[in-house]
Length: 631
Ligand code: ACM
Image 1 (tube, rainbow, N blue to C red):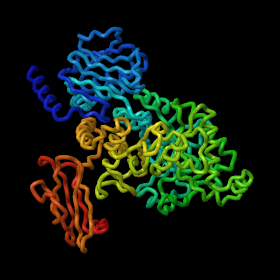
Image 2: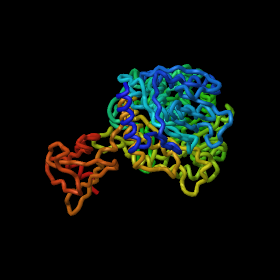
Image 3: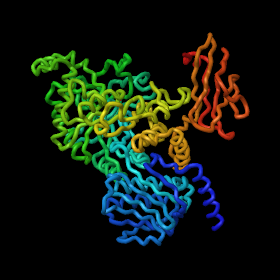
Image 4: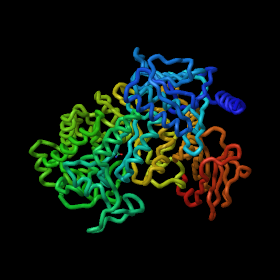
């Protein structure tokens, strides 16, 4: 046993020389000390100044330790005996203003590990830091370690922003309670605190509204289709049975809300109106202008896209803002949503609402004339203002995508800037609270690796680019920026493991941007820490993308020659390639500079290595594809 301890100590000692810590997001301050603490069966979890909610948080941590093979007892203590081996969790009676509600201090000493915070959120976050300091085997149910050595340190930590979110689209694919909980559990480990739940869209309505039962009887179900979303999938056939889908009952929603709250996460529900409403209109066609019966869209072609955000809807998917029935509908929905979700915000979507059907409808035109509404942007604004009144009458605040700025923003509303930062800048300059979530840095449905190995979608976003995200643009007062989030749209994400693959590691970057001090931002430090989390995900059997290791292939046409440059941004890696249809090996052709790929029936094949071990996937890109990519 002693020998084992010695080996473990040497391992951790040498490790600590090279990497001070591997915590994501990086803490505000971290100082190593000479102490060493062994967390094992003799450790107890001592709570000072606790409360029932804190007990639940600690029980969850106890369960995590148990999964890691360590059974520890929870005790409530008035005066912790610091000579006993214990993990002491203390809610401070004398508040430390610099920590806020989510900050904490954590100290690993010889006999104790001590986490102190003003509030439960801080203790929760401190426990997540502690979790990341334990050996990765703690994440594995197959190889419980039974004990974990912790190196001495003093941490003080608190978030840069109060809104640190991930958006999860549960409409384009339906995931179900267990999957949503697993997703929430993982994001909480990285100190996200907002789960923006996209519950309605053209492809499915996912929340039970008791006063509008058809929303889920009809709107939650579609015919099952495979193939490319919005492109090659066949339209539903007349009378075809809708078999794919599902929805959350209100009891299930309450259960998920409670689960999230135990993990310091507030859920912001999104009811996407007036556009993106095909599923609602399949249930209640009378809320559209054409009032034509339709089916929930299975991802069959529904729009023509003209670039630059311009599009035409081939099927009506907007509510009719000139019809009073629509506001009765919104009122019923928001009444139940507001009753269910305890958070202060309700998201009304408001994005990409197509105005063509409004422009072509005589009653809408007459309504606009009567109410002196000069164009459909003002009409959308009229709609948003009515929705804002409904939402605020339920004691909630409205937030919507940046289109809600068009034609004049409703007083009291907050804006989520997605079409770049400009909507957010405009709103912040008007003194409106903003959540930044621009496509350029935060759309984690975009591909992250080379196109040749990713599930196709129309844009890409590398880990490096996600890390460049800065939510406070120049010239904007930081106090109006609530924070930011990354958005996971699921048109091409059919299952939870792929959702994890798309989310991580880019969400590490988002989490670090939103939590850690800007002046400490460092790609080299971040990528080193990210690598250690790959192994934690492996141990937890959770999918994560290693695309960042893979070569970045840049193709140029120089004097009619196809020239290729390879690069990547991970230290200590070497790139190897072939252009003769053989597979690249690490004692073969090492990349040292741009090379020509000759015309022929061949592919560029390239792979990253470190110390002889391959990293990430091999890329195989046919010559014709290189020609297409050549600039
Ligand atoms: C959005 O991506 N349509 C908000």
